[in-house]
Image 1 (cartoon, one colour):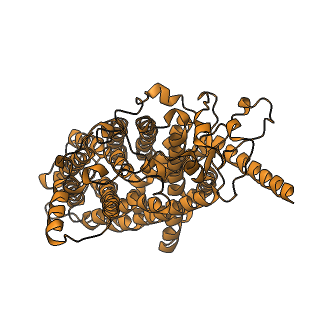
Image 2 (tube, helix red, strand yellow):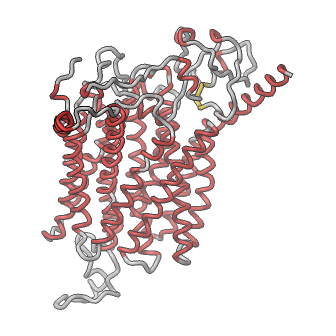
Image 3 (tube, rainbow, N blue to C red):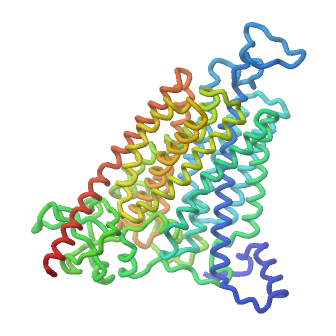
Length: 577
C-alpha cells in the first residue's frame, strides 16, 4: 500500500522541513529517533489517561464528609438534620453517599469495560493518530465537565452519571491505541526491562493525578478535574501533531515481526507437549523445543487446538537440552509481554493488511486453551487494583487523622510501590522463566499483607508508609504478571500465528473481562464500606485467593516443566561424564 505525504503528521513534517534547511548534514539514526519519540509520546499519553481518571478518588473526601467538626461559614443554617452534612456536595450528602459514589465509579468503569471490547477492533482499522487524539480530547472534555460542576453549582446525579459514563468510554481508547502504536515500531528484539519501565506509566499517572487533585481538593475541587482534563486534551493535540503510527510513512523499514524459528527459540520460551499426543511415551514426560528445530520442520506440524496444552515459558536459567528429533517435537514458542507490544497489529496502516488471515471471532477465541482462565483471573486481579485506585484516599481519610489533601498525597505511595513491584516481578520472571510461579508467590504474600495493613497501618505515619508501599508492590506485581502471562499465551497459540488481528480480538476479550472486574470492585467497596472498612479488605483477600486458584494450572505446568528440565540436564551431564 503506497504511503503519501498525507500520512506524515503535520508537526513531524515541519520538523523535517526545518531540519533539512538548518541541519542538512545531520547523520543521526532516523529509526532510533522515531522509536524514542514513540516510546516517550505513548508513555506520556497513557500517563495522561490515568492522571485524568484519578481525581474522583481524591475528591470523594469532600463530596461526602463528616461536617460536625467544621466551622460553617456565616449565614449557613445548621439544624439537627444537616449538622453532619451541611458541607457535603449534593446529591452525595445523604446516608447512602458511599453507595452513590460507588455507583459513579461503576458508571465510569463499566463504560470503560464495554469500550475496551470495541476499541481493540476499531484501533486495527482506523488511523491510530486520529483514534488516540479523538479519544484524549473527548476524555479531557468530559473530565472538564465534571470539574465545572463546582463553579456552576450543578447537583444533578444524572449529570454526574452521564459525564462519567461517556468519560469512561472515551478512556477505553488509550490502551489499545498505545500498544498498537508501539507494536508498529518495535520488533522482537526490542523487549525486556525497557518495556517494564514503559509500563510504569499507569502508576506515574496515578501519582500525578493524586498530587494535582490533592492540591486543589479543599480549596476548589473543580480544578482537581479541570487541570488533568486540560493536560490530557493538550496531549491529544500533541499526539495529532507528532505521533508517527507507521514507520514506512517516514521512510523507515517496519520491524521484523516474523523471525525464523531459531530466533523465536532463543527468546527463551517453549510449549509443553500434550500428554495424549505421545502415546508411546511416559505420560509425565514433557518435551521441549530446542535451538536445532528448524522453522520448516516446525511449520509442517499441526496440533489440534482443542487438545493442545497450556503454554508456559521455559526456565531461562537452565540451558536448553535437545530431546528427540526436530520432526518429532511439535512446538510453539511463547514470548514475553514486550513481544505483544512488538506485534504489529493488522490495520489500514499496515502493509500486511490484505495478506494475513481473517480476524477470528469471539467464539473461536474463547475456544483457545487458557483464554477463559486468564480472563477470569484478570477479572479478580483488576478488581483488587482498581479498588485501591478509586477508594484508597477515602479509606486513609476515614481511618486516620489526615485531611483530604494529606490522604491524597499519602495514597501515592501505593503507586510508588506498584512501580517497584511491576519491575521486580518482571525481572524475576525473566530470570527464572516462571512468570506464573512468581505471580503466585506474590499473590500468596499479598493476602496476609492486606490484613496487616488494615490492622496496623493506622498506628503511625511510618507504619502506614512502609505497609502501603509493600501492599502496592505485592498487589501490582501479580496484576502486571497476569497481563504478561495472558500476552504470552495469546502470542504463541497456533491459531494466532501470523495474525495480529486475531491477537487483538483475544486481547480485547481478556482486557474487557478484566475491566469488568475493575468496575465491580469499586462498586462493591462503596456498598460494603458502609458496614466497616474491614469488610472491604476481606473482600480483597477473597478476590486474591480466587485469582491465585485460577492460576494454579499454569503454576503446576511451570513447576513440572522446571523439574523435567533439571532431570534432563542431569541426564545430559551423566552421559557426558
